[in-house]
Image (tube, rainbow, N blue to C red; front, side, top):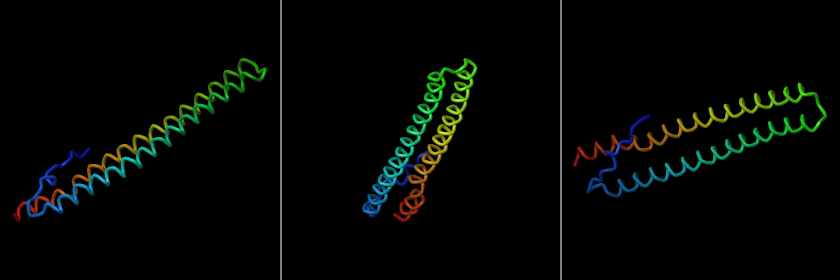
Length: 123
């Protein structure tokens, strides 16, 4: 993960308006990005809950039918396998999304740094 670079946050007295626009723009971008990420996370949590309910329903259906114990066990194994696969898929997507978001947030803070250094050198 790229560390945050605070060089560009140091205001240049001759350039305070640009600094404020850049700084506040970074916060707006960061808020938009984190909001979008949270919406995706909520969607993934919903998918995980739906997978859990679907797996439970399969087992409940097997028990409600006067099925043989082997059939009930097979339904339970199948539901558990399906649920595990779906939850691992959700976890993988969440990890990828968090990594991507982290990189985007680091980029928001790192991009203005060279401009700030150049302005600082001119002053």
